[in-house]
Length: 153
Image (cartoon, rainbow, N blue to C red; front, side):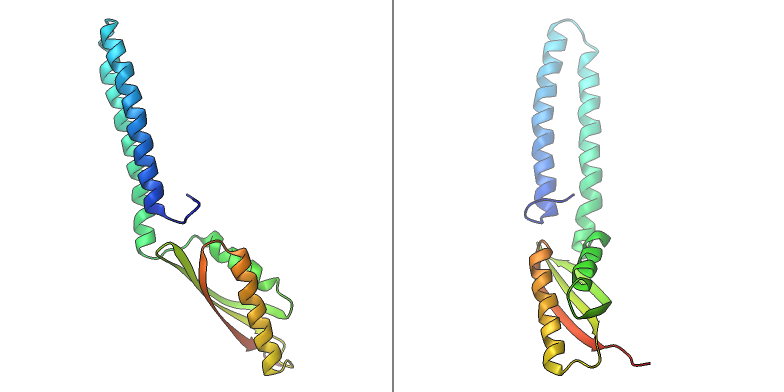
């Protein structure tokens, strides 16, 4: 689940608060149902709350452990690749490695450039890639870009 600050734990906490609100509303409905001589409402409300809690636990249980392991969504890696490939002077994106570190993404990108470029020109291409990624990738805090000359032949 995408969120504004990049925190899976805070999204899970927000879902927890949402469930608490829904549980309070369900409790009120259950009390009204029992007061209206509909005793079946109480167990149905209890079952509904249990289903909601299990659903939120399942979602959080899937997202939080992967973040502990620094896992990043393939879409993020693809976005990094596409942005790097779109920079003038990049012939190919050779490698992309990215991972979550806390609430931020750190990445390593290797790009292939024209072997005829000077060292300064190759470095400028790498800096352009770094700048483009800094503007285009949400939560990116650090990126290391290496340039490799294309093989001749």
